[in-house]
Length: 237
Ligand code: ADP
Ligand code: ZN
Image (cartoon, rainbow, N blue to C red; front, side, top):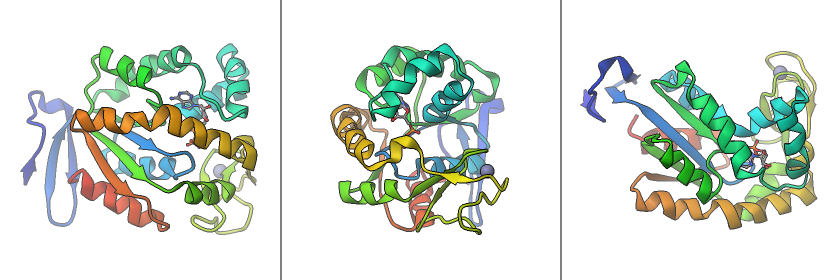
């Protein structure tokens, strides 16, 4: 048995049980720092199940707000459609609110936040302690290839990929029979804009978290499961 993050408050511990070891972790706050299109939702879902902690996806929250026609959603739409980032203060606000909810007390996986240095600084200022920042390393050409093949269930939001993560029946969601569609921001022009945004605004976070000693870098592989496995190994789970 390995004891990581010495539990001062055992009620906040998270158990990780695998074939050959049991790990007790206190507070598992993880950031997924991933270039656009790199199935981070899929990896986050695995970690979420493994540790029994919620995934907080700012992309999904913003899309949800848009679907519900809230003021924030409408404000975010133009930025999203152009492949730009939604303004920091808007995203910081929704994350702050979400992290204050009860289900985050044992930890959480932040999927898609922070994406800029000011967002990371805001997180530090909120007093949120992060244990691991997962950095999935991928070349631009691969990102473009990936994004063009992405599809998402129109109904439940489950992500798919035409070649890497195909549904059982073409064009149909495995879980809810919803129709699979391509997000507007996955169209080729927007993809290039998003890549540029990523390099300019998000990539500096790699050295930001490296300096804090929290970075776990994993090479993105075509096989999504292999990447997920490397992530779990990287965080010693
Ligand atoms: P992907 O995983 O494909 O990169 P997401 O679903 O995480 O995209 O986010 C989609 C869009 O939502 C982003 O392109 C951006 O416009 C907006 N968004 C999501 N998270 C953030 C964030 N932390 N800061 C600013 N904008 C964000
Ligand atoms: Zn579905």
